[in-house]
Image (cartoon, rainbow, N blue to C red):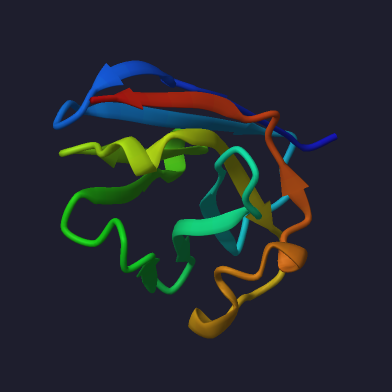
Length: 126
């Protein structure tokens, strides 16, 4: 059974940093794509950053230059380094993984992902 467990969320002041981790287990083969999504109160879930096995990376325009996605395949762990955080980055952050291939244009389509973590809260205060 595949499990994704996020950690690293918390409360931080604006311009601060956080690093989210997503530990994956139960994969019979390497996930073909993994990503971070977030959902702010009263808003739909949106893609933040994602990466596929070809090394293609996609970032939301709102986080470009501030967030960095990376993965440690040996540890089956996905990371999201978040710098210069803003109040609008507040929300629940979810890790997602997909067992099949995924093109760049589809990396932010949450319906394409097979597995999801339980989410971790990120709160940025002014």
